[in-house]
Length: 617
Image (tube, rainbow, N blue to C red; front, top):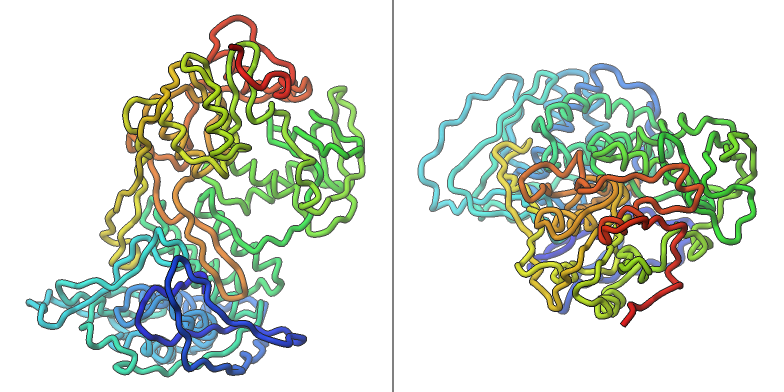
């Protein structure tokens, strides 16, 4: 239910359809209440529902007729679920409609039979739906209809579990109809507004029966693909062509889903779909890899370079070694394959996510890693993936302590390893004229933006967060609701020079902070461009226990330019080098120190935070 929260105070029927393990001894049902308030359950029932019959065609290629039928079904599904005034978009039955309805539609042997099948599945959710074999005559605009108390759907983003997005019925000024071709010789006419009094469950038919879906049968895969495709078709905020290319690719995605009879193969189908969004938040869950290689690496100077090894590791791999192959497969080939499944708006962030994926494995089987050292000699070493929890505290980059005073005359605060309390304590040690370096090479989990108030005498606002307001399918005539927040000036004002360090690992909230810095000229930004994705994610669940994570709003820079595809740009570009990694140097930090000190030779060989933790008095 997390993807379809109950927000109404009216009594209504809700149901959960889920598989039960053969050895289960009890079922527990309860509320998860966000905030304070009571909740009631009445007339609860438990029913064993039939399992959908096995599909003998599972895994077989689709015929051209089946592809056309499924395309028509998929398009109609999105129109009705999110835009028919009679529909409840978060009704649990929509999963079944997507899955079993798709299979039924695929079997129709003529346009007439397909039209009948579509009516069977969709009229219970849209009783005034018209499906015909010829284009519909455009409806003239109706006269005054205020006495009808019309309502229609209005989506701010689209409502799943994240409260930043909302779908609600709102008053409609006129009767309006959506008309479109579905393919397969069919056309749809769908009223987008209806009298409020016609929306009660008693006023419309309810002919659909629930069936339990298998975990990875063809119906479940087709249903999951149709749901995900439609969410993005109607609500993804970053399509530059209004989704035309997305529309053209629907048939291929359905073909791939039908043939992906193994769970791992279908996961790749979903990953490929999300990758085509170029959304750095985009991901497919749940995660299936429980083990990690006990090292860190990054793509540096067109090579995969080891940047850290676990403290208790003696596997023969050292910092600065270049990874050549894993189990005999060239690392370039592995990264190319992983990159094809990574969603990212910039190449640098895509390579970083692909490299991280190569560290993750489903088993702890020993692996043969071919590496090349500074001497250009290649050697094979055995490396065993380790349970992720065992690496906690054992695997860290070459960085100073989170709070460090360097004798060159500057403070260093690593925002990715501090929380508000520790940062506040650290900032109280800073004299107003002392330089400060903030490290944002990654994600700050426990730091609010309030600290930026020390860098300004005026309020600092976020970049514009734009939520698409959608009332028509296919993002037609959408407009934007802009939201954001401010940071107020805070005393004492830091008047020394300030620099922020960053790279392609800085994503989302990191980019909010850096965009505020860049947009208001609060400090220099040293390093490489950020990931190029910001805005609240809006996860949703699919049949088959998959979850999709994606960005539900569009964020631009303060000047209106695109963040996606470029990221927040550094004011002082600098990149790590293989030579620097081998010498245990942090070249980005070195440049940051030079920027804030503006004095002679500030190169540091592995600066250590424990050498000085407080400023001289």
